[in-house]
Amino acid sequence: MEISSNTQALAYLVAAVLFILGLKGLTHPASARKGNFFGMAGMAIAIGATLLGSEVQSYGFIIAGVAAGAVIGSVLAARVQMTAMPQLVAALHSFVGMAAVLVALGTYLNKAQAGLLNPVLMGELSAGIVIGAITFSGSVIAFGKLQGLISGAPVVFKGQHTLNALLGLVTVGLAIVFATTEASWALVLMTILAFVLGFTLIIPIGGADMPVIISMLNSYSGWAAAATGFTLGNNLLIIVGALVGFSGAILSFIMCRAMNRSIINVVFGGFGGDSEAGPSAVAQAAEKGVKAASVEDAIYWMEDANRVIIVPGYGMAVAQAQHALKELMELLEENGVEVKFAIHPVAGRMPGHMNVLLAEADIPYDHVLEMDEINPEFATTDVALVVGANDVTNPAAKTDPSSPIYGMPILDVAKARNIYVIKRSMRPGYSGVENLLYYQDNCSLIFGDAKDVCEGMVTALKGGGH
Image 1 (cartoon, rainbow, N blue to C red):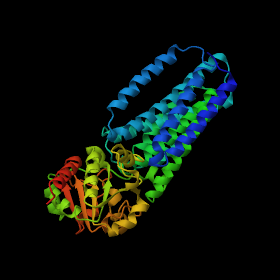
Image 2 (image 1 turned 135 degrees about the vertical axis):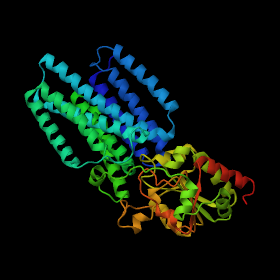
Image 3 (image 1 turned 135 degrees about the horizontal axis):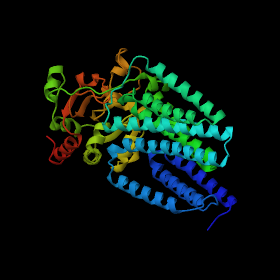
Image 4 (image 1 turned 90 degrees about the horizontal axis):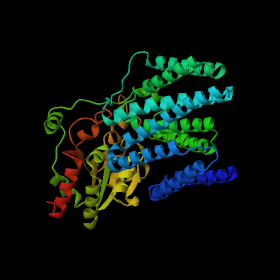
């Protein structure tokens, strides 16, 4: 069955509208599920309309590719934990980038044999290869950092920015040569340098900036898809790529604003890294003058509180503690305690990481508040419970001009009457910046796995607390 070009264009229009509605739905947790359905419906229509178009001559390789992709995608969806979602997103971005490179190279070879090359097409091919290659190698480095295969510390060296600038200029120059002369040597060198540039751009970026980088790579993957759309003459791919490219770029700028930093500072700053773990968490705490507390200490204050604010971070994601927090919330509310969750825009390892985890545990959306909404309430909060969050609660961002995070808006946890922080150790976290919150008189640390500690709090509450 083959559809006409007009029918295909109409189907693409419907799909594009559904993609826009999908993006609109994803702007709020309450409508995110509907947004995902819109996106899936749009993609199903787009794929169907493409497969039934006149440009498809054979279905053999297409069916094989779809089947292989479906099997791989299903296995990944079933096995990948929510904690590994940022790594999965980075890996998927790399696939988009490599697909753009391969499509451009394949198109070049086919058109060259048929003698159909022209300057416009060569320019499109150059854009697809350069953007796709940078997206691929940059996403691979991001995946390695998030997965722990590569150190999260920024890798910097003298003359790094100069090297990146030279690589960029030479790559653009080779793209111009390739577009105007059709020289295959320029194509090969341009492709290699673009892969290298993606590596050198992302390797100096540390853990604290990884959420922004994931968003930025998402934008790159969109532009790579749009370039592929131009190469293939597919209007829907151009539209979808532009939507992803612009939305990723806008999200990156929003997150940078939440960190009070420019996108240039993030990309070229080389801020944030790992630090070595010390011998004993409690021993380090005592040595540094930090108070260690028990589960029972926290419950003593929490069950008699009027308001408790829970601040989740990546430590919650690693321990999968969101379900235990849901039960803790319900028990506290049964005792008449108001419980809210405070979310910082860059908490976790990718945009919306904490919101997704809390939604997975069926924590009501009206209990989850963003930074600007919740900050005024900390001063009248009896207990703030920080579950594996670091930089987003660090008062150094407001009080220490020498700190790398100075000026970054934070959650005002320090203003709560009592603060309990669940941590595995005294390590400062992925960014490598020590948290001054832990040294305040109203703050105590509970050392242990976040899930185990939260489950211990649930047990203590069920048993009558203290």
